[in-house]
Length: 114
Length: 110
Image 1: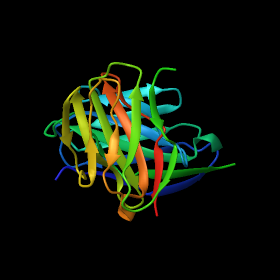
Image 2 (image 1 turned 30 degrees about the vertical axis):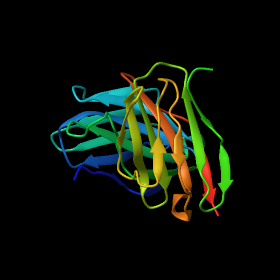
Image 3 (image 1 turned 90 degrees about the horizontal axis):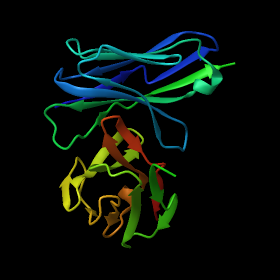
Image 4 (image 1 turned 45 degrees about the horizontal axis):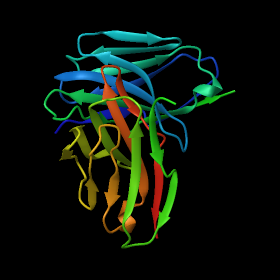
């Protein structure tokens, strides 16, 4: 079964710290991987999309890496701010699944303390 | 405004009633999806559609019906609502830029 796992489930850091969120997936045959942010009671906001041929993507203070062979992705957040507090979701589109569907991890709930 | 619009944002319904959640996209994305989000289960795919008049089941389709007569609309119907269908429902579409999600519908079945 194709699964996506995110560790840790929750993370609390002081403002200004650099941090890494982890995502692992069980099948290295993927089309792409997408990181989302979800604020409480809100929808999902796309942060970064990494195609299977890419190793990393960057947007501002965010950097996402992809290592297909080891089934891992990391989301690096530089100089964290209280506004970064949210749940971060990793989602994978596996090659073997039909219909362009995504498989989601359960998320990492990040709290950045002032 | 461009994007995905879901309605209603909140809905309370009684057990056994039929309820329809609406989803509209302003693009012409071929693929559209319905997910539900529940504590302890994350996001799970209910149904998806590859194009108008083409739909297929996802991971948890029981108790739900979808239709897609027009590319831009993808309504989700709960034929006879049950308490286990209390959840937050998200509609999404996908393009080469990845997935885009709507703001969600919070459904409570009492």
